[in-house]
Amino acid sequence: MRYFESYIDNSIKKLKDKNLYRQINYIDSSQDRYVYISGKKLLLLSSNNYLGLCNDKRVKKAAILAIEKFGCGSGGSRLTTGSHSLYNELEESLARFKGKESAIVFNTGYMANIGVLTAIADRDWVIFSDELNHASIIDGCRLSKAKIIIYKHCDMVDLDEKVRLYSKGKNIIVTDGVFSMDGDIAPLREIVNIAKKYKNIMTIVDDAHGTGVLGERGTGLVEYFDIKDEVDIQIGTLSKALGSEGGFVVGSRRLINYLKNKSRSFIYTTALSPASIASSIKSIEIISKQRNMRKELLEKSRWFKDRLQELGFDVLDSKTPIIPIIVGNSHKTLEFSQRLFEEGLYVQAIRPPTVKEGTSRLRITIMSTHTMKDLEFAIDKLYKIAKEIGVLEG
Image (cartoon, rainbow, N blue to C red; front, side, top):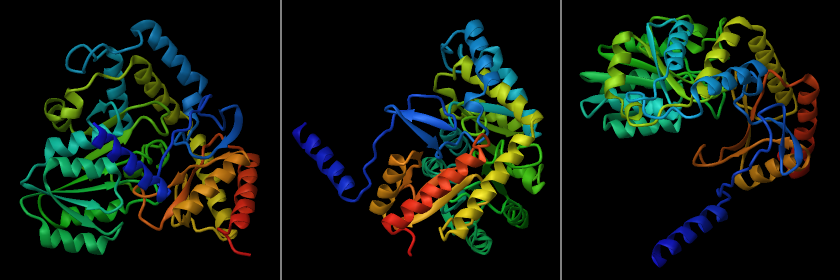
């Protein structure tokens, strides 16, 4: 036991020495424009609550009514006692929303990615995966035991060449829709075209950050590119723009029935609570009817990104409400985040291994509920502190 404790202490020390040690901030309020941490009021610029639905009165009312009718917990796994009737309503809503035959809900987006990839692929498969795919996709690929071929980020020439060289009997191309640390969008139409060009290639997109945000109806990246029937499997989350929690998969009825019987992360876990399911149902209804929320979100995001670029910040090629400010050095990034906290802004520092060495950053996320006054305040503080600590020269 002493050796084990010494090993832990040394590991933590190494993380601290490299400015990679992480601590949890406990928020004392709802996910709104402003939050409270230890009594301090902060403008929230790090939440995936893109449309503000986490704290929407209609969504909260739906959750309360579900608790009153169904109780707090689900009481079991989906295949035993956990599938209350709200689940059926949500899965039918998701299928209609995404324009697919059927849907299945998982407890998290992480579990959905792992559940799909391990249920479908094995050692006889080859998986082609973008180098910046989310950790849940990476872990799903590894757990499947398939041969994994990494292609350069959104590089379709590299993907085409690697598919030509390494594809065999059964193949998958898997990608994030919106990349969560860079905010850029996968070239999904080109990915589909490459899959068509070669034989026996399944396409999978994790549309976690696109669902509710992109597309005329807010259904995500497939609608955004107008390729509805050309992507085999769409994965998403209920915990970002939808303001609830959970993950989901939509596709053919055959696929969904298969996952219900083969996906271990679906079968062997207790079902989500009724409140979470009811919240998701109400959020889909709101998103389907209120398109102005997305319009406001994207307009504010473009304004914010353009203003940062004008001031000299490196914000990569973000086209979404995810706006990175590349700092580079992890120590400097932590300092930047802490100074912003002191000035009334909550912006998280993102460091390796979440991003590559030398690309530490502040990850800003815009919400439709942010006012222009909020965003102007944030710009002023970001610019002021960046100048003071040397992130921006002059």
